[in-house]
Image (cartoon, rainbow, N blue to C red; front, side):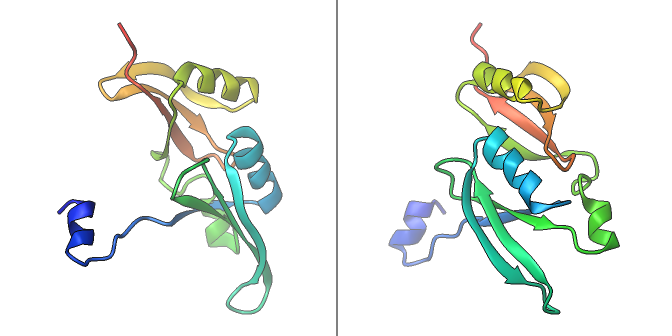
Length: 146
């Protein structure tokens, strides 16, 4: 059922609010996502762990997006081991842009590491880059004009 049909039928709309990326530390992650990827810093609030230790609630998101990313500082060995490996070496995050060439050039100039060069696929232009934690992302743009 389409979203508009669900709403007219009295059902609540559902959307993905946040996904978590486990990072080594908050501030370098904020610098990467806000300074390099040009995401918005939505929230950076003090919080506590379940056992009372200090942490922060840090949310970033692409401009105008509904879904955000919770940047969670690794807590303990298990979480530290997951930094950069949240998707077992696969691309797990996808950043779609309108101007692929401009975004690719800007990210390269900012020192972002690309694991694979740009290529054309039936679904658009794509290049794989690494975030500050080492997770793989697809930078996605429109299908290249012939």
